[in-house]
Structure formats: C-alpha cells, structure tokens
Length: 327
Image (tube, rainbow, N blue to C red; front, side, top):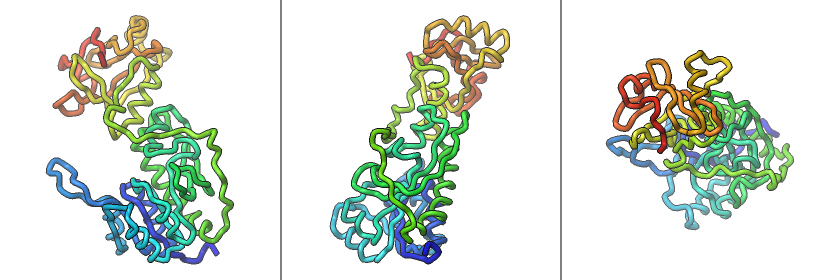
C-alpha cells in the first residue's frame, strides 16, 4: 500500500533538490544520500558542501560522495542498500545502467519540465528564455537516455511574465517536493501506469555556458526581456557598452501604448538599429531591438562596479543616447 514505508536512496546535490530530500525522508527510510563531492567556492575557494549534504546531515542521514561512478564498486554499494527505489533530483552526473538497476524498482527522477519538453541539464532557464507561459515537474523512471524514460506523474504551473529563472526554480523545487510526497509511495506500491514519452514532441535544454548570457539585440524586445530573466541568476545576461562588458540584471518591455511623450518619441527614433540606445537620462535607458520594440534597462552592473539603476549609469556617463550596445 502507498502508506507503507519503504527503503530509498536519494541522489541530489543543489538547493533545488532539498525539498525532495525532505519529502523522501518524511515518507521513506532513506538508507543513503548520494551527492557530488565538496567543491571550492567563494573568493577564498574554501571547500563547500552541496546543499543536499548539509540538509542530509541535519536530518541524520548517511551521506556518500563518490568521486567515480564508472567503477563496479559504486554499483555494488547501491545494490547492497536493498532499496526499493532511488530518487534522483538534480544530482548532476549520469548514472550507468548497473546503478539504475540496483534498487528493486529502479530510479525515479524529478525533472523540472513537462516532459518530453526541455530534456537536459537546464530546463528551467531555457523554458523562461524561450518565452514559455507554463511549465512544471515530471516524475519519471530513468533509463539510459537523457530524460527519455516513461513518466507517471506531473504537476503544471504557470510562468509569470516577469518571473526569473531563479524565482521559478525556487517554486518548482517546492512543487517537486510535494509531488514526491504525493506520488513516490504510490509508485512503489504499483499504483501508477508508466507512460512512454512522445519523442516527436521532445525539445532540449542544454547545459549552460557563460556565453549563453550574451544578449542578442537583433531579436525582439520580448525575447530580449525573456533572455535577461531566464539567465538570472546564472550565467547572467550581459552585453557590451563602449567595448566593455555590462551585466544586465533587470529589464522591461516598453509598451508604447502606455508610454509618455518622450518614450513614444524615442520609439519613433529607434528605426532598425538593434542595440542602439535611443534614450539615456535620469529616468530611463531605452534600447532598440530587432523588431522595432524598446527594452528599458532597469538594473545593470558595469565591469568592475556595483549593480546600479540604469538611470544612475546614464547620469554617471557610462552610457549615452546614440551608443550601440553589443557592438
């Protein structure tokens, strides 16, 4: 029955996985928590434990941090735990078939998208960048592919038009934890039918690099705005001004129907020069995009400086009308 406790191994590393760890701990006997090794972080590069390890130790759960997974030793350890199931949430490493088959009922993944859309390492970021209005979490049984296994539960949620990837990630982490509480025991009890994914509808969410943050001003105003909020907090959106990098922390799309006379005049002047600064004063910094729309910069961080309001940047003569960003 779904209410009976069962043995589980938990795989996960970042803060996103913590609510799912807590949910697993509430409904199962977690016989082992597997996370990535401690890594240098911060200016001092001190060894820092993954968020999952920190929480697992607070809960009194045993933690293992294997450096290598492709040896038979780790697969033997997994089998030796006599787990009914393993729960994998943003662990960050690919599991071999002998590991996937170690628990009696295999490994279940909590993936932050509505599969088969956004298979891959960064589903939250790419859903925001691509202007999706809805996403969610999907519970699936892992196979050797990249999120290609059969699914058995999902929860949907809207994406707010101004919501950043970081904000959405925090919500999806909580939603994922609740889905684990409600569905993992039922999976172990055999109450779900496993449903094959429609590969024809699959899209990808590749791993992020720092250069993914670069703003392409030739796209439309809404796409630029979605890019900025999608790349927050990492790798962060950026452009160049007068040949120097500038991080762009926040923007908005200027709706000319509600803009003042000065902003409407700027829109008329924007022409077809993407990245051109059409207004830079004590109130606004407006930039032309590829579809003729305007993007208002709200918060920026010039190289070597603190984050500031874009208007403050303009008043400090870091940018002026007529400059072209990203050139």
